[in-house]
Length: 450
Image (cartoon, rainbow, N blue to C red; front, side, top):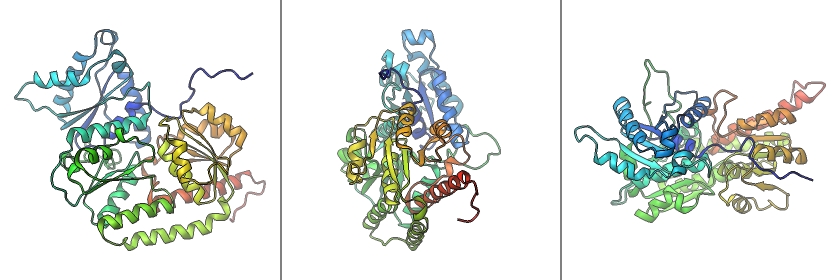
C-alpha cells in the first residue's frame, strides 16, 4: 500500500518573494526590500548570486520574536529610513514574506503613515508594494505580482504614441539584450519591463556600487499607458495578475500574448507581429538566423528524433519547451511544474495537438520526488530544466540540459539564450551535443567521429 504523501520534498519551484526581488532588480535605481525576517533575504540573495554571479543587495525589515507578535510597522519604517539614507534609491520595491502576511501587517497603511510623517526636507523614494506570501504560489507569481504593482503605481495615460511595451517573463539577461537588439532593428521604441540585463550581468567595478547601473527607467514606465501595444510572453497568467492586462483595462493599450518564443514556429509568430506593428519587413540578419536554424534542424535531426524527455520548471517555460521539443522530434513524456496556475495542461493541449495521442503526462504542483518516480516509469533519454534536478539526473544517470532559473552548478547561466531564432539555435546545439556526449560516454568504443 502506497503511503500518503504529507510534505513537499525538494520543491520544483522557489519562493514567491524571490521572483519579486528579481523583478525589482530590473527597475532603474531600485532596491528590493523584504518585509520579513533576515533569513528570507539571505536565502534569496544566495539563489540570485549563485545564478547571476553578481552582488545582490536585498534589504530586510529584520523580524524578530517581538515583531512577530506585535507587528512589523516599526521595523519597516526604520528599515526604509536606513535604506533611503545609505543607498539613496529612487525606488524601493517592497515584497512581503510568509511571516508579515501571516500576522496581517497592513503594508499599504504603514507606507502611508511613513510618508505622512516623513521629514519634508528629505526626499522620499517611490515605494512599490507587492503582496508575495511564500505559502502560496511560486517565484514566478512573485515576479508577475511585482510587475503588476509597478505598472499600477506608475503608468500614466495620455495620447497614444509610437511605443511598444514588452513584458518578457523571467528570461535571462542574454535574452533581454537580444530582445532589445530585435526591437531596435525594427525601429520600435519600447519599454521592456523588467530589464536586469545590466543590473545582474554587468561589467567589473572599480569600486562597489550599492545600486548597479541599468534597469528600466522610471520615466519610461510612466509612459506605458500611452503605448500603441503591449506584448506579454505568457501562456498561463490570469488577466487580473497581468501588467499588460491592467494597461489594456485602464488605458486601452491593446495587448498580445505569446508562448515564450522558443523554436521556429513560436519565433515566427513573434517576428510576424513585430513586422505588423512596425510596418517593416524582418531585417535580413534574422532571416539569416532562421535559415541557419532550419539547416541545423536538418543536420541534427538524426540525433534527437524519437528521444524522450522530461521537462520541468516554471509553467510558461515548460509549455514553450514542450512545443519546441515536438518541433524537433523529441517526445516530452512528462511536463511538470511546481506552479499551480491551473492552466498548464489546457495551454499545452492547445499548443500541442497530439498531446494525448502521444501519452504525454502533465503534472503541476509537483516536487522532485514526484518527478523521479515518474522518471523510473518513463525511462527518459533527457532531463531539461534547472539545476534543482541534478541529484535526480546523477542518481538515475539521465543526461541533463540546464535551462531557466536557477543554474547554480554551472557557469554562465545568466548568458544562456533561450528565445528567438538565436536562442533556439543555442539550445538545439546543446541538446544535440548532450545526446552525442551521452552516446560516446556509454559506448565501450567511445566514438571520436559523429
